[in-house]
Length: 169
Image (cartoon, rainbow, N blue to C red):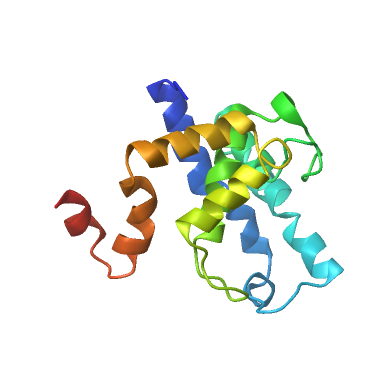
């Protein structure tokens, strides 16, 4: 996406902390194998604001804080917590939204099996322009086409615990 090194650093810092607000959500809700109740869903949806409130006094840049608060906003304005739409959502949060959903889809969850890369990419493509900024989805697709290691890395390297050895091999 043509980002400068300092912008990539913002994404790194913000994404490391983007779900820190989930610390206030009980594990039995986060790991629930079945469908969430409305109350449970509402509690989970507080995590971006909780995380933002936890981090705003720590000296983070406003752009880093925007990732924490806005990574569940949707391009069409139907996300949470602030129902921001389009370019009113920071670019950093829009990028993180694509990465976060891709990671969630391709990871095992208590309530479903991990999806394949192809199925996850179909989901991103199908939700481009509604859930996701089209340019962010297109950029992720281009990176995946350019070098498949970016999406193979989690599934092939994390499971056996030899991340550094295999990544550098």
